[in-house]
Length: 110
Length: 117
Image 1: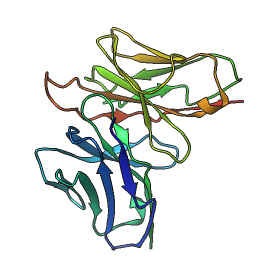
Image 2 (image 1 turned 135 degrees about the vertical axis):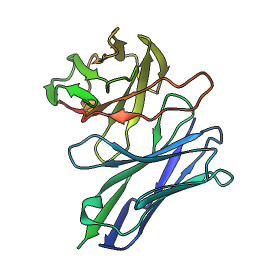
Image 3 (image 1 turned 90 degrees about the horizontal axis):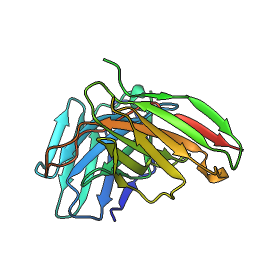
């Protein structure tokens, strides 16, 4: 079955810097790759996603890139703000199930 | 427009007991998935319900069962609770994709925190 690895597990940046989180997946048939942000005591919030027929997608300060050949995808956050501090999860999916990475705790200090 | 709602928020049960968790999907959604999130881990897929049938199941024992009602709401039942069942249980709703299509976006509720003592 699918396996998703996520790095780094923790990431600390200064306000205004960029942050990059990377994930790799094992099943080449996976075709949908969402990213979620989870704040303390809340459920995961979908922030951006990408499908296998697209190489890059951008939404304001957030962008995601996908390399199908290497089976990895990345989340890029530019001009980070303190409110970006949270746990970020990547996931991969073929049909019903989302298979999640173990998460990255992002801390943005002002 | 109400998002995904779950009840109860918190629950404390004793080992061996049974528990039922409830979920109402986002308006317009017809598919419900359940996930278990242990502390410090990513969510793990339990199963997905569509048209009142279990469509796909993750690697969870038969003690975990579910139901979907005609109004698309769903219940997760866990029997013979173990200490290891303590976790945040998340419900996610989505639209069923067209035949042969890829996954649609899944939107999560706030979760139910289950503590087994």
